[in-house]
Image (cartoon, one colour):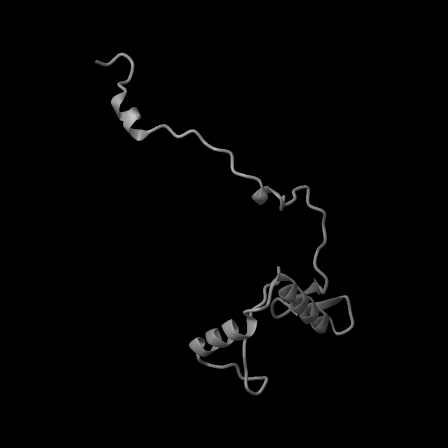
Length: 110
């Protein structure tokens, strides 16, 4: 799984030290990035890592390397989002009045 995180630097190498400054910059710079923006940036980064290849090596230890694909795993899900469901009115649920429930005595008790 690949996750993205936006960081800032003045020289392209040394990251800003202030967490508050990084937070403000992220909120300012990324506020108009929606899912398609994040996806495209992540795919571009993975392509850059691949350097013209479909995979790139990822060191996992002193003598072990993994191979990472630059493309995400694609699949067809058996479950889908019904975007029109939110347009349909919610069915009304019958709610008993709490006062009526308290007045009723359980059967067999008097």
